[in-house]
Length: 225
Image 1 (spheres, rainbow, N blue to C red):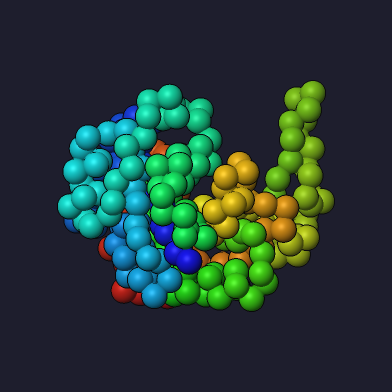
Image 2: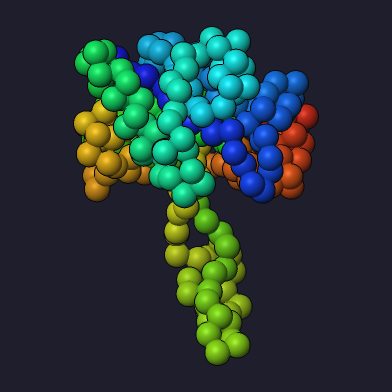
């Protein structure tokens, strides 16, 4: 049974046009996820890029990924990621030995070297249908009602380190059974939340400021564990 990596990479980006091809640390943004997958060949059998864009396709092929041409009907701004993964499985229907999909988002280009190894071990150990990475949240959150701020996870004056532990989905890595993807779920009800404490979890590129932060971290990469 095979485990494949899928990297969805649309051509259209409104807030940061062309971001998937922007050079980050000397490589196109999406290439970081391709190379990460290829560096984990003990787990990942093949690497696929799902795209609707000819330039992205060319770059994906250059870096050794197989390309799945994504139809325009499922390439819109509001299309959920799971439909791209379902389309990949539909295209590969003759390759019916695909058991697991590792989703690597191009907009999360920086990951600890051993993250996939550690996550996959937990995925197998817990015998779950899915796993996704999360990080501890230390923000003091609240809502604004009638012009007033209403705290939701703290009381005024409380120290951040004393907050009740809350976690956020950080987007670094997802593992799902192929059958879960076919049923429309990347994160299933029994999905295992893998906690990671890494500055890389703060990188999710949607704006120029996000991109600049990623560039800074790459410039300091030798000092980051």
